[in-house]
Image (cartoon, rainbow, N blue to C red; front, side, top):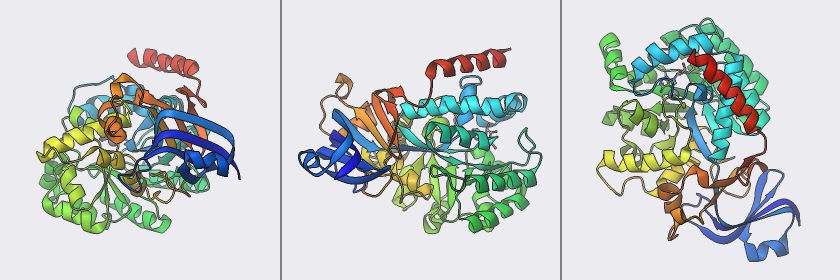
Length: 436
Ligand SMILES: CSC[C@H]1O[C@@H](n2cnc3c(O)ncnc32)[C@H](O)[C@@H]1O
Ligand SMILES: [Zn+2]
């Protein structure tokens, strides 16, 4: 049988079924989809592939899904470090965004983010930022999968003057992008403290109508929860629930300070959580009780947040941090084992975005979004368990090859759709402008 690609690998970790690792197996890809997974000894008899890859020192995993980021904020990486969230946002980031954010900023910042993410094995990112049409254009151009947020915030920006215009422009974008195979368009209201009641209620109505996720920062800090309670007598999650937003389309980012009944509400409603351990640590925002949430049955995915609060877009780092921090918070070394961290970065992310029929595991019929990791270096020896090496010992620098929908975006560590020399020059121009 003629097919497009055969990848022979030392290990294949499909994620579904869980805890299975195939050795000396082959993934067969045709027309962008996984069509077979079988022992390498059988593959060459059954298939004639246009291209055969021999990755005999490598593990194949599903593409990593960064469920929360602000891609273009790579241009603000390192410009305002070591601050608490509200000081960081109000006194540094928002003034800088007011001065600099426009189409060119978002184009170049997004390109930098996409280059970094592909080289780190991320094949899908869920974004929330101004000028989302530019983020979408760059994602499509470079071949990476993305959730492009229909953003909403009460204050005016260079992109929209008021809440109604944000919603209108978001809906126009949704319409324009609805046939793009690599793009979805979740609603992305910024946070409970920056979006007032009326626009939030509109989001609920439109999200139901269009059947899209609602992606929002929620309970990032104790300050956010306390301030809401002082002003209105309700906690943010109670208010969101009153608007009917806590449902299977809801993707709540951060979720620190959770009470038991809030965990119960998320579990019974089918809403999702995106845990961003490194951003939470760096801004000293607080802790998400990930083990408790998972035990309650909540789907918990992973995100980096933006590069101005992390300061990288490294999902390997995020898996490791989630596993380590999860143990510390639960006071239990058996909490968040390596396989759980890998699931959070793959299939759980796919579920949160409503894409689990398409991505998140190396299953026959799914899109060929695949990452190859070279485990032959001394840093990852000896290999008793490849998943343990990937989460606890390997790094993004071990990623050698990446495919999205069967298209190779990284070939032996070289990006196929981005020119790094040209990008580096553009980024340095931004550094010079922003340093003045
Ligand atoms: C409406 S576009 C997104 C908006 O969010 C800001 N942002 C970036 N990181 C965070 C964070 O951790 N918490 C809250 N808001 C954040 C970003 O600067 C944009 O203004
Ligand atoms: Zn964020």
